[in-house]
Amino acid sequence: MASRLRIAAALAVAAVFTAGAMPALAQQPKPWQLDFQAAATPVMESITSFHNFLLILITLITLFVVVLLGMCVVRFNARANPNPSRTSHHTMLEVAWTVLPVIILVVIAIPSFRLLYFQLEVPEPDVTIKATGYQWYWGYEYPDHDGLSFDAIMLAEDELQPGQPRLLATDNDVVVPVNKVVKMLITSDPLGVIHAWTIPSFGSKVDAVPGRMNETWFKATKTGMYYGQCSELCGRDHAYMPISVRVVTQEEYDAWVAEQTAHLDPRGETKKLAQVTAQPAGAAGE
Image (cartoon, rainbow, N blue to C red):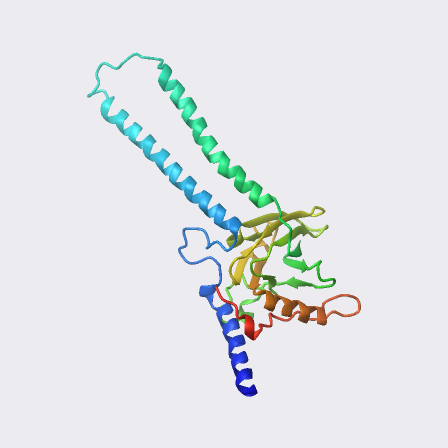
């Protein structure tokens, strides 16, 4: 009976890692992609909704302008209207083309300000992570777990495992629990340059400025791998500063933290960074 349980547990762990490595479960750019990456946080869901609303609005405005231009071409060309009107003012028309744009801007401004407040107002965090941009890689610290820190270096092509994307996978992933508020403290090496920490599926994009601490937050609602890149031109290897975030269950996160803190030496530095150790009872899934 015990051996059967061990086999079942091993199969569950293997299923978790196999699912996590499959490209279909990872949020990353796709060939011929036209739209945003699928939203994985409430902030990105709001951004996508606002984008779709604006797309409909500007499409209607564009069609309206095209219709007006068509009417001008058809009704007021020299052949159809040989004696043009000499009217120079029209009070109602002038009021309309002043008031309507104001109304449109107010309609846009209300959800825009609401979204900005939602993005910038950081709720009480469950996890805090400090990200520091270097030339040209990212360093991470978990202040809630003294001494837990590591660097994330882009994997070379000959180091990639099956399912890991080129130019996006790193040797160490940022690990966070699902459905928890994660506060990101973003800065840059004091002797370095400006970078930008960006995860499209999270709706997160914050500059990393030397000597300044910026902050953002996200709450991932789906487990899986999420990829981003530095989004600020930062020099020679700007294209080789990927960001990889693994969202796992709370049980897997607790096990990962316990494993990492077990590898801390007396100076409080991480000796070795291991990958997520999945628990049989908490298999990750979409």
